[in-house]
Structures are given as structure tokens and as C-alpha cells.
Image (tube, rainbow, N blue to C red):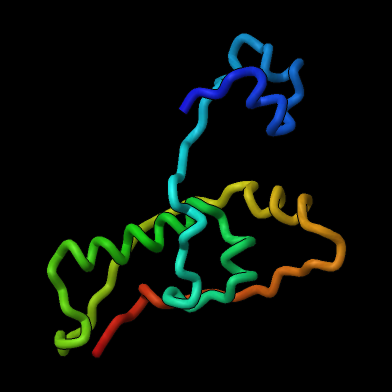
Length: 118
């Protein structure tokens, strides 16, 4: 999705930065990203708020993979796994630097997709 100069300014982008010749005035559009079902994936609402949107999308996509495969985990007697990869990014630094005073992140790993068995 392309952004206008006004949209970039409203989002807090420095006009000097957005005028640079190699600055890309575009970004992804995640429609419905606010509809993430944190409890379904084993996260609290607070954890989901601090989670990278792309991570939430990754979890939903991994679950959809099982659904599209036609796998009924309630009736399947074996173990099922969905594997994916990612690399680290500076996203968490951005989250922490933009948090309100008094907020804290509790470290937690959800293993919902690691090992599904009936």
C-alpha cells in the first residue's frame, strides 16, 4: 500500500526522511490484524499487544495450514507439527521504546504449534 506525504506526516515520519530519493513510501496492510484471538493461541491480551503483527499473522497462517489440509486434530491420534522459520529483528526495541511508563513485558513462549496431539 502506498502512503501519501500527509499520511506519512500523520504517522510521525520526519518530512526530511520521507523526501529522501530512496525512501519507499509504501508498507504492508494487515486488514483485521486487530482480530487476533490471543487466548486461542495461548497468549494474554497484553502479550498479544506487544507481539509483532507479523508474528500474529504467522501463527494464524500456520493454523490455517492445518485447516486447509483437512486435518481434524480432535480425531487424529498422532502428533502433528507445523514448522516455519524467522530471523531476529529490531521490532522489540521499537515496542519497548514506545511503551507507556509502567508497562512491562513478561517473557513467555507459547508452544501451541510445537506439538499438537489428541
